[in-house]
Length: 270
Image (cartoon, rainbow, N blue to C red; front, top):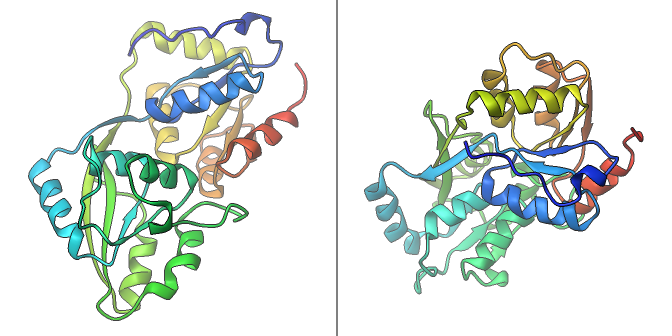
């Protein structure tokens, strides 16, 4: 893992270091927003590495079949980037594109999908997840509805939750899936592990957007106690995972910048 940079003026910020654990591409976007909002001590510490799908032939076959689908469900922004790559959306792609949250919807728009073709939870939704998306897309379902789920795969072969897929099948839909990217744990050298331990001792605040990232952290620092650590998590399921790993304080917020900043504003001053 490359050396972890210190952002400009971080030493002058009396607030604790914020560790943004999203994958590198997303972490960079959130880091810029946090620095602009005055959290200059924020640092990127990705806990999930993203790589291209292993079976590119199967992914290409899924791209060719997409034109015959009624809808494509992208589980994340990484799924969008892995599926479209550097190519513009297929000219014949008329399928609805389902996004569980604004980050995925923004990635679809960046890939060239018109906003009017994207279905996503409303901005005021209590959460951005499959359940919130289902409330929007359920009226589209009919017997024979063809859905392609574009997702990632972990090193151990896991592909994530299939809750929405099961809802579609229960209403007579036909569901297929493809793997558009791979997730794995980052590799830390001794210097990186030591620096992270120092951040923990100094009261760093952890920002988690994935239970899988928490699993990777536990394996990277297996003997570390988290009893004095604070975690801000973007979903109740991640809160459960953080609690199981012994984090002393856990705050849940929606995965939107304004919600994160409101949660951060409630942290006690050092």
